[in-house]
Image (cartoon, rainbow, N blue to C red; front, side):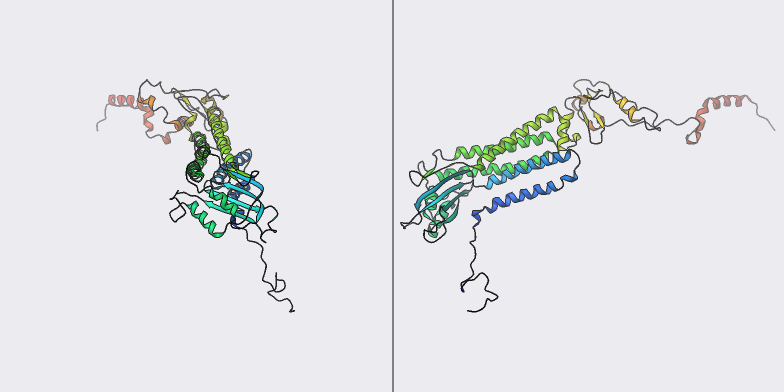
Length: 438
């Protein structure tokens, strides 16, 4: 017997190299795993920068990022997930191959999504006593999206073609038995047709919820009121997807029997309930944010970090509102053309606020005047356009420059104007003085 060589690793008695089994993608859904990984990476990237944010804003950003990414992740996962309806049966005694008398004891499960079904078959005892192989199957059958013609030819639907291909491959009989229920298309057993239609309309609603979610994020940085509206629309569309799936599917419940004791009875799965709960949560959050924006606008703007001047809801219909921006500058509204003290403010008027700001400034010795515009007459253009000029009304009035110091004639354009009376009388006196003749 020769000594071990360079290429004898993992070999015994001269046999070829033994490799472990290569798991198929459907044993761990690659698409769902990729979506989860993508959203986790984005969330982790935001969480890294949280220590650089000061004060309560750190908690606000954490809540906003977590809730926002959770909603987006649910939309994508439920759209591509295969757990809208599930059915499982344990320790089922069934035949293994068509044309063979051998039987196995296996666990069978069916996972149904918007685009097709996954059928799993796994032997309870590992399948070693049967046919000298490991029985662990996971077959996928897709029905998107055309119904196709009757039969199993090249013009048939996608599901029927994949079903025929599985028969030619020698797929185990329990999987073929389950898939056959979705190929029937007559009388009251159109489960394949109705589930395909339900998945078609439900997946359209889920794709509609995705751009609404993106617009919600954008609007929460601009106008909170419209952000709340779009958040409610996002939740409503997600709930509509659940309603479409539950109503379009066949009214006759799908039950696949294997024996009198073991049956596959379908019921709504985790994806269905996760999408439903998230949609209702979006509607509730949208209503809460909308109400808080009307009643407590200062708190909502601080939570979302939005500039209040971007929203005109603070001054509506001549109402008086008070907002303090990040620089601490107080801005007041105007009602019916007259200035009024701000609601919830301890300062009596704008003059007092200006006087307090000028205490530490020695150069500004004059208090800025406040001009009250006359009341506007009714049914005029001024009343129709009273909402314009909001920024000008909220800004502090400009201070007038101090008057020139008396006696400083170097800056005067015509210093003789101060002595105009003197020149007048001097001219009269000059006319009375006779001129001397030579």
